[in-house]
Figure 1: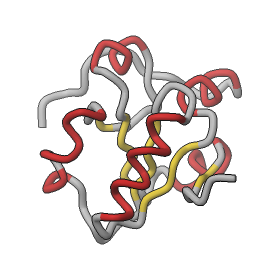
Figure 2 (figure 1 turned 135 degrees about the vertical axis):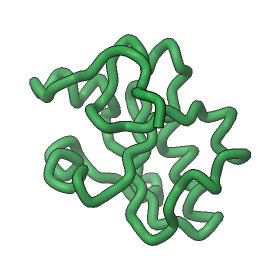
Figure 3 (figure 1 turned 120 degrees about the horizontal axis):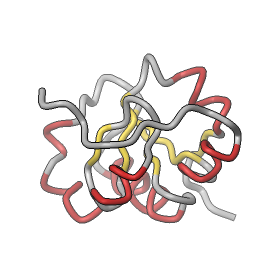
Length: 108
């Protein structure tokens, strides 16, 4: 059994407005469909982009099914973040009938 903290899709939907959602899939996967409001930071880029993530807010990490997000959640916890892996990932979010956005994020 994993010791990685997880939240389910319902918890993500209820908490998404107060937390930071990071999508660690590759950019093409993100563009094809993602949880609304999620920020794309591919797994390979996360270690060099930690300064983009606010330590004062919970971080919900999402991928396609939950494997990459669990690994990156463990990494973030080791770096001092309050991080949680989203169980089932974007696939579970979509299968639950939740809204999915497509395309690249708007420039900030």
